[in-house]
Image 1 (cartoon, rainbow, N blue to C red):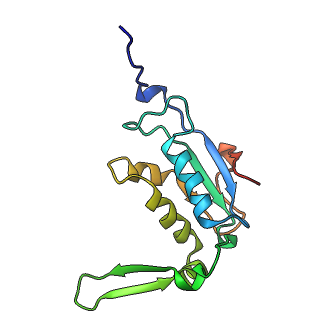
Image 2: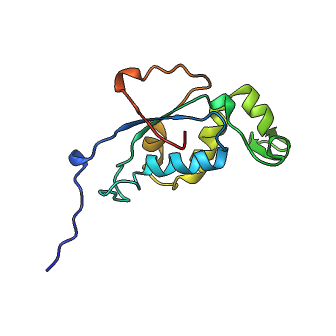
Image 3: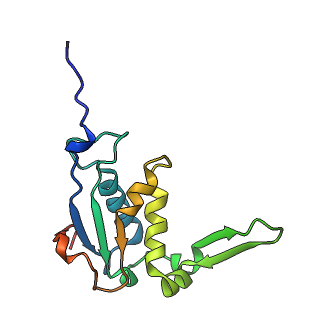
Length: 144
């Protein structure tokens, strides 16, 4: 009989990776980050365990999008009261909080389950080049 191997939580390691978002497309960057947060790039991937890695994204303010998405793409939120819908364009969100745009894109690409919050805690996004994770010595990741 062949047994299926299932990794134990103590066997899992969370590596550190850094991505420079300057000039990268928002959606393509988000898919790469979601894959590494899930841990699908690892041999020991298991969907019921949190086996992903820590991701540090720098230069979030210099992300690019294609087409007219800066003006056309809208983010909506609702207060719960009648007429309480608010909308923000991608251009306004990037000007106000560039990290939020990347976090929203990555959040939409992760499965909605009990592990989502733990996976999102391992995503660190910074608008500039400075970040406090130098002691973890993150490895570069991405096209650049």
